[in-house]
Length: 310
Image 1 (cartoon, rainbow, N blue to C red):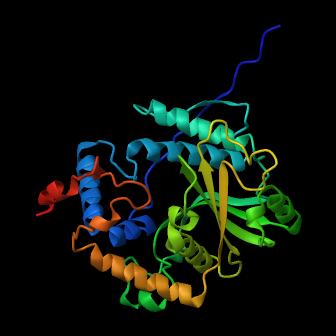
Image 2 (tube, one colour):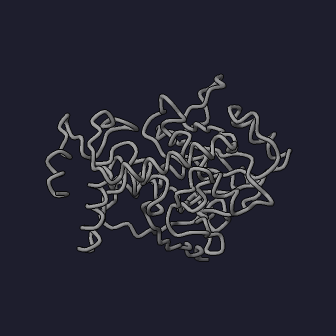
Image 3 (cartoon, rainbow, N blue to C red):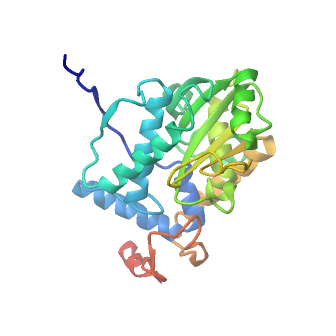
């Protein structure tokens, strides 16, 4: 009698953002010079067929997050079983590969595949072609939802009252959820963020994702957005024994956007678009959300690199 052969799944994944979307505008608003330099690096990399830096921590953390995102997508959509062997093409990024696998298995060991209720979609790109009303940001955006920005939603779920009871029992900080549709966004972190909302993109990212989703689904808008932070403890666990406070998993529930939120978003994106043309170095943002890739050992390398933009 011979053992059954191990089934191997080959997975292709993409890293990077949705183009000139939410993260691009948040970066431009934070530091126009950093955004300009990253755009320049991207263009040069594309011209030479090289990988690009596309994350606050550079390629390493970006690829770790990309691997985790792909695995958890396959996991919650039923394509990936925990016991299956994996083979992921990730050249020259072995450390990121290992970390992506470790983050996923830590998550998998604490959350079953059906934890989030009914999965409506994973890695969903919006707006769809039929949703588009314009190709560029119109002047009237300040009075309308930012529905034309490209977004990729990590997970879209629909929960019943029974699902909510189970989710809140496991993650008490999500108390306030109710039956309906929610968006989920994964955040892989080295340590627990001091300010969850700021670490997860502040108000802008979640509210924009919801605004875009609701524009595309006017008959069934979402109830809110769940940021799910996964912290790389060894080992990962829900909480320490006898504690209610989370340990390795830090969720945050964000409300659905109000009319005031939509007006704020319109103003924000118009301002960010204007700032992006200035190449202004905002030296107060070098350590926002971690450390800027152009801020190395206390030296602002961006100021020297800025000459390439002249």
